[in-house]
Length: 426
Ligand code: AMP
Ligand code: GLY
Image (cartoon, rainbow, N blue to C red; front, side, top):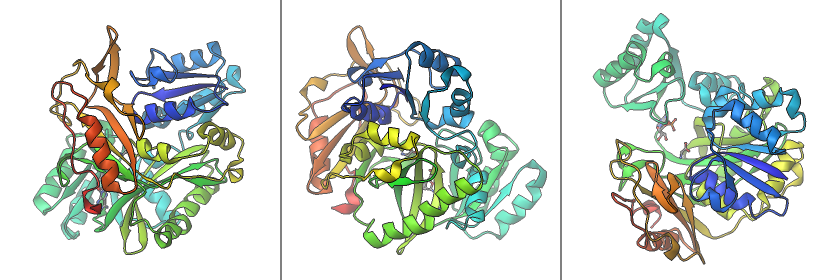
């Protein structure tokens, strides 16, 4: 099979690493990819939202399957665009339709969907300029803390948790009246704060059947012990010790199955990944967000734990034959630790040479590139999250220690990483 993978992060390097191991893979292209994906296939020089270039590549390179990594092209409708093209009749795409991707593209859409299909989530209200005053009343009557969410995509920055009313009202005004997140905050969801522990659950669905992938926990804050601003994710672990059998059964019955049934009932075309951002309260799951793609850096622990042929799973999803796939997981713990550029998630510089990548011991660790690019034959930094090391161990602690040990071999100007990934499981 000839495969085109869209994206350029650590998630895409993990996908590329796994797909390139499949006997079904004849040729793998990654657009635009990074310095790591070029070791698994051929990088192509166009962006994930350049629909015309993607289409041209599918035709010229006789692509059989497109796997879409990030949310942006999905929310913009890449799947519908490719499927409708008469020249691409035989092309299969892993990634939901534009309507299905609204689960991530619009928080208000996702909340209404959950309410309609009785999927447990926080109570909420939705507001625009038209009912702004109602929003102010809603906030003033709300218990603290109050969670404000920009409706649209805001590069992971659109959620603000407010500890007092002055802050909540100011934030509400900034979002709606002053377009803090541009069009994304023209509409705002205000919701109840859920006190519990957070984890991520993933499925691959063909619209009818689904397979449950290993769960993961992501570490979003830049600083140790979860301090400082939110990032895309500084590390992840899988499996998650508190995601026991009872809890995961509840997740399947109360969240996953109603979601997939709901998508079908509402006529939302969906062949792809669903990422359930959950809060666990007791044994009960509550959905705090849906994403229409895999998580990053969660993919960097989920994919290495998957023993199945990943490309075979994707093909089964395109044929609505996922019921024939049995997921096999590596029983060991996997953890990933992300090395980031100085200043991230604020302003940071790029273009620094990355040293020591050849020194990584690959017997129990895997190096995944994220924001890297090859310049004059050298890997150089090209983003905030630069690379991560995933390691296996019999405990989370052991896996984390191995990743940290391997990161000590690597150096670039301004490099830092969290040393406490998995700290609560020690
Ligand atoms: P999101 O951008 O939707 O991933 O949200 C960012 C983070 O805000 C989540 O990872 C949670 O830690 C937190 N969060 C979002 N919604 C809630 C909620 N209703 N209650 C508590 N925490 C929340
Ligand atoms: N790591 C969280 C995300 O991918 O959205």
